[in-house]
Image 1 (cartoon, rainbow, N blue to C red):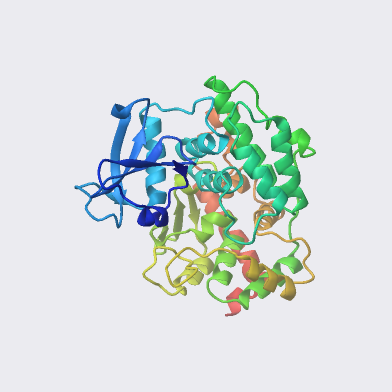
Image 2 (cartoon, helix red, strand yellow):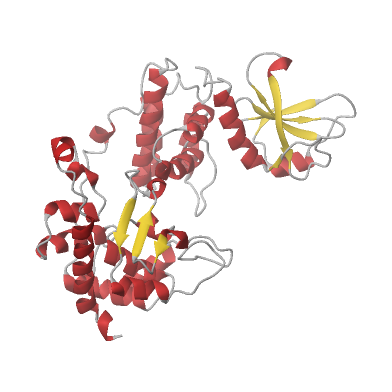
Length: 404
């Protein structure tokens, strides 16, 4: 029996009067639940025969657990993916794309920053889980089902194109490009391991019409308009926006910032490598205005600086907030938070900051790659600190921050 294993399914499952029965997951091949008269347990199957079954946990409310760890079905599925990789149960050629790509997404090495996005995209657009907000169109549902249920060697370019076309028609072209990027990366991995011979997601940039390069930046009046629009929101939206504007950091680096990363007495913010896009730790020298801004933020029991709800989760710039800002800042067309980085970088150049220093303020390490990186061993921390202070002074003057 193959079905999507959930906590609810296991709670309602009929246990046998004697012996044992199994429920096998339709998403992760080799992950299942074993039901006996007295217990339910999570198992993996790493090969053929009964001896290859390994028990590793039990559902949280399964009753007698015989000393096993207790996990939710979702936690157990992720644990099973790791165990299957460890035991060498790689994706066979006949495994459905949804199961194979889900396992690959969970086990993928590299930049941790992308793992959450990779797992979310794979779960929704390959494995067929529902959207958190809104619904898929019938065409999208049909395309996801056809794609995810096919064996990895049977997926055709037409299958992949059908999904992309359905997503584009639904206004999700950007997400469709992510699906193609991750699909292409998965097939590169599969081809390297001789699990597939053709990449149906190949030539992504040609399909998308080439690489799109955004060049939008804000002039001072536009930046002031957005600043004032966000200011009306108060905490957490305004200080989060202000921190983005002052430091030139990335959206997720601010929204998921933790208090432990800041030393307000020393005036520093250290973004750890695992939260930085390029995997390199980034130390930011905070200007007095930024320190004052952070000290004014109310402390809660949450580890996050910007808290998005009573449950202590991290704040994010949600859709309803964007709609309110659009109304207040109607004169600023086509704005995005990431444009603040481009605005700061351009502003630093206008203020006379060197290219090397300005790029390092944005944590762009390519400026010191190649032969330059070999010969230039200077730290540049003092120069970067002066640059952030110079930019903060410009923003203070523009927004009237010093008058408060």
